[in-house]
Length: 122
Image (cartoon, rainbow, N blue to C red; front, side, top):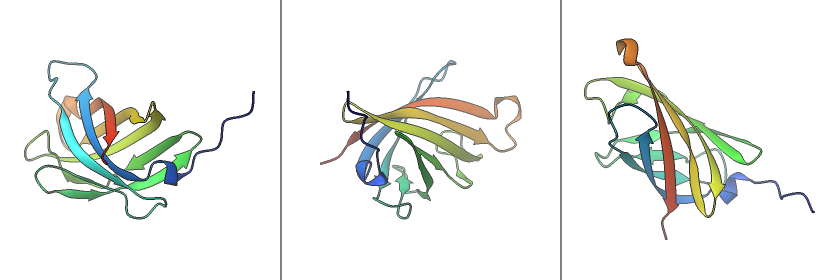
């Protein structure tokens, strides 16, 4: 079989509705946001329903795109600052992956791992 075509950031470009849910624990509530992705490394950001807009630093590795945020106000934990790192792949027309949230000064529950799934908006 022919080798798969290498992906580019352009393959991920668009506006995506994202739902992220903790992988374990008692909190099963989702964090919802919109991911805006461009064909280059500039212009990637997430926008939460609260209006908070967080820029992303992105890299492409094989079939996955990785992103990192700077520190921002957590939308899950009121009054707590957080940074996140995500890895996503294209699967059946959706983005699927994992986000790891690092909460600052949060004690023993300072890391939360979430499963994410995103659907492209028209």
